Image (cartoon, rainbow, N blue to C red; front, top):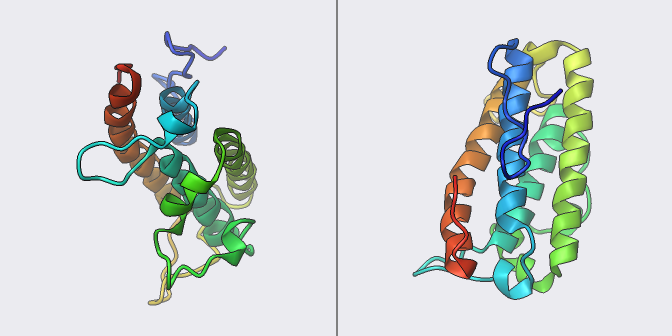
Length: 179
């Protein structure tokens, strides 16, 4: 049985192997983002703070892209999923953040949830095919490839950093606070 906190987030295991620990922390970070975006309408997902153009809607779309990039494109060498397959990233490197304002809250949540589901499947596939040491299929320009372990740590870091932003954005919308 998975322990859950007062927001319903799955608690990472206290004593587990490396894989379960990494996946536990990643799922906790994903659940934190879902909690920070829960119940918000387009105005709430589009709110900004101070000089930043960052929004919770943009964060959902950006993290959907990050999930697909690392757990499908990089890890397995697959072609980009829609909508990423039509983006000219060289001319619009912030497309994921910027274009979120054109999407409904339902579209943003569905895009992110589908990307997370694909990531879970892609990670399970890679774990069965080499475990945490399994290298990504797409290499960096110098020929090196990150391991699945590196990718999972990177995803935890990416979510943790953006969840800090999400705390501030959500508090500005309706006063909701919490880790």
